Length: 464
Ligand code: ADP
Image (cartoon, rainbow, N blue to C red; front, side):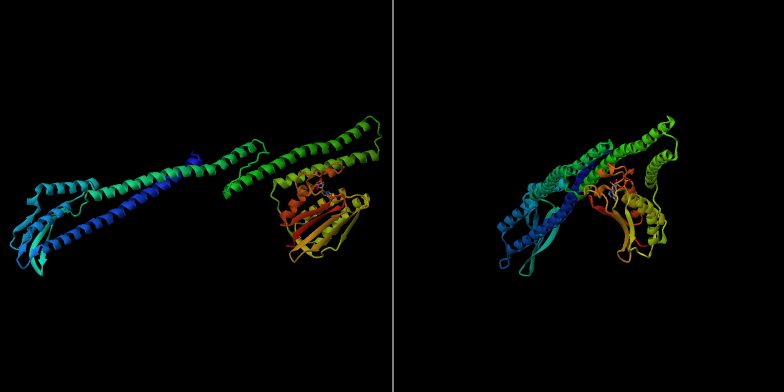
């Protein structure tokens, strides 16, 4: 297993090494090709010049050669690596590099061979001779045999140039490799450093330290998103953990109240302080109902959490459902002295899971009942938004909620402090269940509320 940093640096080096090798090879191939052509062209030009110079040394009117000039031309050709032999039409050699300076000729050839073999170990070259006619005033006056190391050769300067260029290319290669290593190490450090922080943070989170947050900023979009996600995850876990702790205390608290009341009642009955009459049993029964409601809430919630919710859609009349819910609640509202009205209802039908929508209405209406005081009013109504959606509005003029609480009331087990102080018996799951049910219908559940003024819950449902 390699570290990301090692891998990244290694790939940077591999890529730059490949590029450098490619450049060196290509440069050499192209350079060699052009340079060889250049050398051959130069040799060709030299030879042509030489032939021209030789023809200039012949005086047509006297039919005489300028031997002094021939000697000079022959020597300077030799310096360029050309060994010439000049012949008259009568096959007489009037200038011959080999006889003139055999030692230099051999040394020249030897030097050319060494130069070429140092560059190309298997160079297949040897002494080569070319013949050219020497023409003066349109008439052939002789022949020159030009000998050299062929097919072509590099002199010391050529070799120096080509080797130097290669050395420079290799130096550039090493230099760019060094830069790549430094740059690669820097870049991978920049990328892996925040990832290291993320790993550290997730380790802390997995150990239960949900308050851990990653504070560093990254300019890389993916890393930035990763940091945001991990921070968000930590935040959610922190909230859930807080809610879980709160729930345990809440459940204990909620269970304790009816249980100790029941215990007290029972003890009073056993000790004979209370006579076992209908009223006493009613009191016990109320506490048992309260306990049952709590257990039902918990069971409902675990059912919601454990299964993928299936929505059994059917067409039904929304007004009929709302009217039935209203009449089911009527007695309880009347008992508490709250007016419950159903107005302006949408008369058409809706395609949804009837039981689930009924459950949503029940949850919200039970809250309205719990958090509304005597003399206040609760109104049920509907509004058809457009051709596709209908809104069910449940408005109460109850205790309302503080602005700070509104973002949380749909969270599981969340209860506002105001509701905690009341003897209401909920555990804070009613609304989260209601919202899950509405979301399963691709709908939306929202709330507007003001402390001491009341709350308005709006259920938006698609008609189909
Ligand atoms: P609970 O079982 O406590 O009623 P819910 O999930 O139904 O749980 O509601 C969460 C919290 O939202 C309640 O504890 C209460 O504080 C607040 N709440 C819900 N409905 C109303 C309402 N109509 N008026 C005032 N507060 C409300």
